[in-house]
Length: 98
Image (tube, rainbow, N blue to C red; front, side, top):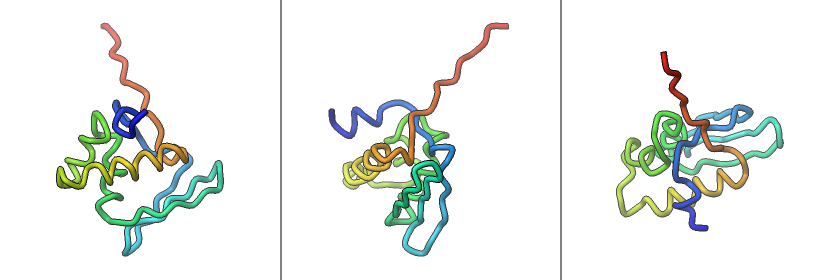
């Protein structure tokens, strides 16, 4: 399965992950797995912060200003964050009929 297919649909930061912005990007610490990850750019940090508001990972990238030519590298970075459970699929919003 390609990284693009894996990242379809809404995503969000795992509830047990804290982000600490740094000059180079950010540190992401998962309190459940005790894993530390480095987000190697401020723009990747903005993508991760914007995941929950976006319909999918590509939309979050575009909203953060990632150029089309750089989308594959951001999708690979997000796929790695998904593999290590730093980001997880967001539950779809369910509308309740009145």
